[in-house]
Length: 178
Image (tube, rainbow, N blue to C red):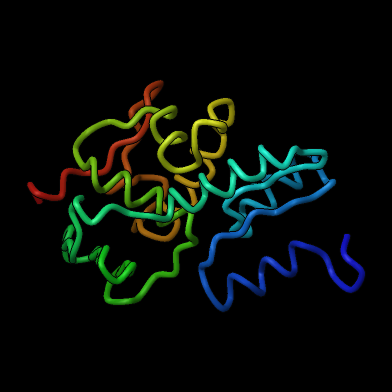
């Protein structure tokens, strides 16, 4: 709803050149618009009206989620012959090809891999990747798990890396045993 273009187009252009955090501020509050914004790579989607305190809190949350602790496991992880993840360089390689991940997809993968072999509940994932203010948005988790599977799995319908624990959450395969 900007003068010369719309926010979705601007978001697409931003994502073509980099992975800086993006929060969409908009009057469009329909679920389809929110999903579209997140699918196009927004890290958050805030509808008007909102308070300055809420916006400040959301900005801090997006920036905090992008700050991956150096105390956690980092470096190159060779999951198997198909999948290599380099946390130091923020790169994911599938079958020798560099795969572009959106910032939210990368954060999701990061937390899944950091907890490989352990089941993360929907609530844990929401809190770590999106922030506690998204506790009532479990569809974000399903949506982004699907995005990651499409980019990483040989057959997204029969995943080998990101496994579903029905009624509980998701688990990244324990790559240490592969």
